[in-house]
Image (cartoon, rainbow, N blue to C red; front, side, top):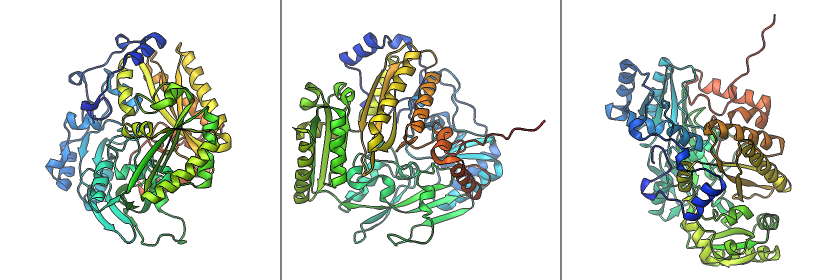
Length: 537
């Protein structure tokens, strides 16, 4: 990906006249308000590794797999959140890992972790670089140096069992490459988050990723059947063939969502399914968000079987961000809320599921907009992040955030988050647009995914931290989770005590101490920093 923007530079977008009018006339900002450095002006923090450190790393993986070159270090200086991109555009010296190391075997990772523990070098696992919560920040956290441990060489389809419909995938496989390897055997994983084009299998597991087909196939953690993990104290092979077990707590759950803090995931056994015979996407319109939510809840609780089920609110529909540039069909033209229901599998099952779902949606006030608008969404569903880059360059402050809650609390939480964002932007003298959609549904609740657009004011990074902090407090006080699928990273770390409680944090710290006694693995992420005990007189 680009070092200071999302994705492939050949797919970068320019703003339309209406989008520019929004920025210039409504937000009252423009490109002249933004200062950004070119790549040639970027100053990268000098590497803190000694020649002896580099020699020790090179002795393990080979000279061609260790780099202290700025051009290799800078792209691994963080992820792709708005904070990351604003930092890339600043004139300040860029914090970056002191080296990029690319192992090719689990034995090499074992040796690297031992050397790093001995030499007090922090290790940040790196997959596709798509974190949006500070999960890749190159924090030394008291260590002498920090390396980016790039897993790109763990890129094999290790095995595929057609009887069990399971496959073992290397952690460094990107989403597209994993699907291509599986498709050669007639199978599919079916995990399609918005980061799909760049994110990796290991990253999906380490962050509890959730894809757009979750209504049919579940989140990524639902797909996982086994893991191999390298920790500083040894290798864990959590890959038993039994589909279920009562042999104590499920240790796989320690590493799903662990963000490289407890160990480095090298391979994942996943559930797969035959390539769908048929795929159908149908767009729907509802008169308002509450009506649409009731319809989605009924579909999910009845189990009529869509693979994709999502709903944009009135603002997102009106702003045409449901499909990046155009919500399509009558949903955009006549107001209301745009929804998509997708179905895939054998043709007869698809038609039966579609008919059952149609009955429920129509009974709840839904009006079909046909397949053309649904296909329009499907064709563009990975393109959303490209729009953020030109908006940032024009002085807009654009970011996303997400949460989940129960069906009964959904409207209450959505309103509280929206009100908080608008009030905080008003403190900075800016109006704001808050767009929202339901992207993942469950029997008992759903996720809420917000897109926020306002004006950059002064120090935009400090501005967004202030706004996001207020939102995080509201999530915790109004029955939400701090994250449904973006993970914790550094950005949400300080809210983990509110999320899991003080005893839960003690459990996390105890696991960390047992598996990583030197504290080299991805420091500063997931686990709140202990508050020093007050000293007596």
